[in-house]
Amino acid sequence: MILLKIKLNSNKYFKTYLYAFATCLLSLNYILYQVFDLVEVKTPMRVLVFSLFLLIAFINFKHYRFGIKEIIILSLLLITTVISSDVSNFLFLVFIAFSFREISYFKFIKIISIFNIILASLLIVGLISGKLENRMFYSPMRVRYTLGFIGTNANAAAQFYFSVIVLYILSARRINVINLFIIIFLLLILFYFTDTRSLIFVTIIGCGIYLMVKNINSNISILLTMLLGLLFFHAFFISFLNQLLPQLNVYSSGRILKYFNLISTWNLFNLLFGGVPNQLESFYLSFVSYHGLLILISIFFLTKRTIILFYRNGLYLEVSVIYALLSYGVVESSLMRPEIVAFMVYWIYIANPRQIIREIKKEKVRRIKCDNVYPKFSV
Image 1 (cartoon, rainbow, N blue to C red):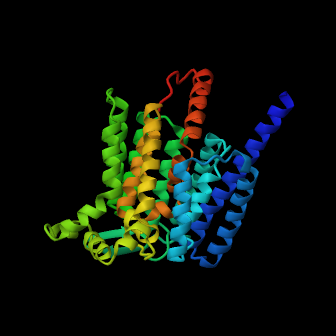
Image 2 (tube, rainbow, N blue to C red):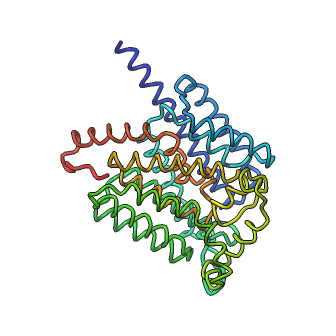
Image 3 (cartoon, rainbow, N blue to C red):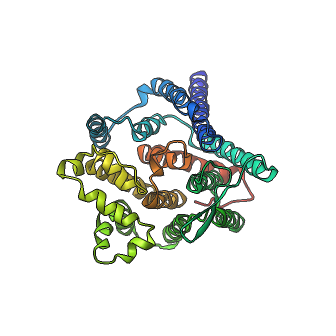
């Protein structure tokens, strides 16, 4: 019996390290083509990573149990993929998320956090030494820097470094004064160079949600659901405000008018099932254009389930991170980019909420027993 338990645990660790290795390759791939302009390695690296996740899925096959919601989403996904003739990032993300069964969450987060911090540190060393160029460019009324990324891609730089900060938060899991100071300081530096205003928006949302779920004693599940609905479906309402309040379009850098123009071209079939791929600076509208409103609604309910489960089990940090990542999706479509690992973690959460809860509770008990310095575990 003991030998069987050891074998199962070692198998779990093997799958965890393999999963983390594949994820680290995704991060490396992002740097190779976004910093060093090695576009030719992007597809081969993705094929390699897909093969590794396929191996993990094969090993985990006996652990897969799909509920009715998951079956509906997977069926709709296959239909919309055929309709749009597009094997998109989302299909890849779904496969990655469901491959997470029987993976050690904390070991995975620690490994990818350390690897991404190393990548970020090497980029910073390259910038300081002059090996990488910190290009300056002007966008309307703003001066922005690319922090080593190619072209005038300040947003790509902001997303990568933001992802590194989020992974650090998830691996540390202690929101104390020192960590809070480090996080805010890093975000301010990132905002100063890239002038990515969405960082301020995302930080306010994430911190506000954390303080709310941490300190309000009464049940706020309904309020959390309403906020989630606002994030998922805001674009459909706000786009039509352009006719009433055209000044809003100026403040949104022209996004609202783009939203309105796109929605105006859809018929009912396109709205429900997608099939008209269009890459916008909004995850939600981009997603609907590819896969349709029906799958977006399904993902909304999966996310709602995850948030409520996390909230009721005291995973306040994870709840606030989910809202922060979804807030980023308001102004960027990066939630469908698996190479930005923090966004990939969101999909892992909504595909495996109960597994995450079990692992965090076990880690909570372990840290309380082993760490006398922090008798209270911050969640």
